[in-house]
Length: 170
Length: 138
Image (cartoon, rainbow over all chains, first blue to last red):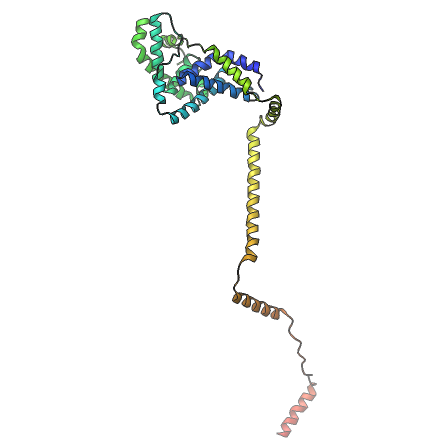
């Protein structure tokens, strides 16, 4: 059984990254809190959750992704307006003092919300978690080629959506 | 696509919002309150230490035993029903009579034939004398 102190350390090492990933994926802070709670509850229930785990972060992100996918599937059945919820602008990025930067972050948040969840997850894992396509593939249960193509499609959409603003503030 | 272009790097530099400090407390506190008692914990750890390394193997073994049990129960049901069917079946009186007759006939056929006392055979000379006597009388 994992000791409470170890769970605290685990949270301190990965809590922020898991929060960001789940928030970006679900687009809902309340759901993100519930999922993070559930993830740590499951870790606490397992006798040796990180036994033979080579890299903690990809492993935890995989758990988070699986939980989020199950959750969103249930939410989609329960609430057909799940997609509309995802498209809502959520403060996923930190606020910026510079107005140009702030507007770029808001636009980026909206552009991310418009991506399908799978593309959003791949873009997040590639850019902000710096995972390789092999690691992303393992995390999401797809082939590396699928992960790469989802990333390319997602990035192209972001590029098209943010081109003007990006050129302005560059 | 190993190296990132300037757009990707620009996105990468955009920081995500900090997780609320209350969330850490909430997550870890709920874990403590949700955790079962020490005894239950130790029992669970003991069971898990037995089962954990090969849960699939244990599961397969369990399924195999269940399959064997079901097959065995199925076989018992078949023999029981065959036994139960025998005395409970109604047989018509005519059929019973016919069976009885057939059984009696079979018994009689199987029994040793009755010993019949044969007339004593005359000696060959006596037989010849009798034939000559008959001819003479005629």
